[in-house]
Amino acid sequence: MMTLNIAIAGSSGRMGRALLEAVARTPDMRLSAALERTGSPYLKKDAGELIGSPCNIAIIDDIAAALPGSDVLIDFTRPEGTLAHLAVCRPLGVKMVIGTTGFSAQQKEDLKAASKDIAIVFAPNMSVGVNVTFKLLEVAAKALNEGYDIEIIEAHHRHKIDAPSGTALHMGEVIAKALGRNLSEVAVYGREGNTGERAPATIGFATVRGGDIVGDHTVLFAGTGERIEISHKAGSRATFAEGALRAARFLADKQSGLFNMQDVLGLRE
Image 1 (cartoon, rainbow, N blue to C red):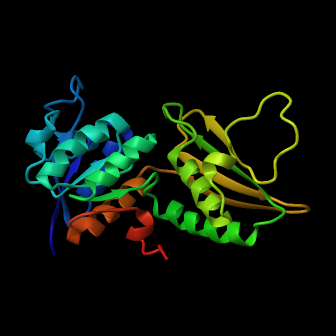
Image 2: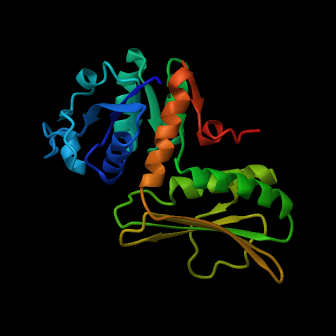
C-alpha cells in the first residue's frame, strides 16, 4: 500500500485540526508538513500536540522549506494564502486539495492555469454527503423546472467571513445550469423593503451567521400546494476532512488537471 505524504495549511485552525486528526488515523497517509501564518503562536510547536498526539512535525511558516517531500498540500485557508501556497506548489510539483472559499473569478482562473502543471481538486465543500446533494439538486431542478420558486438557505458559525457560503453558491450554480440559466443573472442575495413580487426565474439566497454552526444548507423548491426541501447538515468538520483525504487519494495517479468532488466520487456524467 502506497503511503501519501500530506502537508496541511492552516494547521492550527478548526479545519486544520480536523485534518490532523484524520491523517493520524489513516493508515495510508503520513503528515509530512504543518503550516501556519507568520506570527502564529503555534509556530515551532509539535503539530500533533494540537490533537493530543505528538508526531515530531514542527509547525512552520516557510512553505518552500516545508513542502519538499510532500505529495499533496491540503488547504482550507483564505484565497490570498491559498494562491501564495499555489505559487510554491506549482514549480515543486506538489498536488493540491483546495477547500478554500471566497475566490474571485480571476483567482479561479489562476487555479485553472496552475492545473496545467499540477493536479488540483478544488471544491467549495469536501463533504461526500454534500456532493451527493449537489447531484440530487441537479435531478430535482430538471424535474421541477416550471411552477417552483427556488430559495437557498445556509447557516454557519459566527467566524465565517464570506457570504453566501461557497457551498450555497455552488448549489445555485448547479441548479441554474440544470435550468439553462446563468446564476449571475438570476441570483437574489438579499431582500429588504418594498421588493415587489418575486420574479419566477430568480434563485434566492438567505444567510445566517451565529454560534458554532458547522454548516447547514437547505434548498427549497416552493410550488403551488407543496414544498420540496433538500437539506444537508454537517455536525462535525470531520466529514470535510475525510472528504479531503479521499480527494488526496484520488490525486495519487494524476499529474495535472483541475478536478472537483464530483470527479472524486465518480458522479460526473
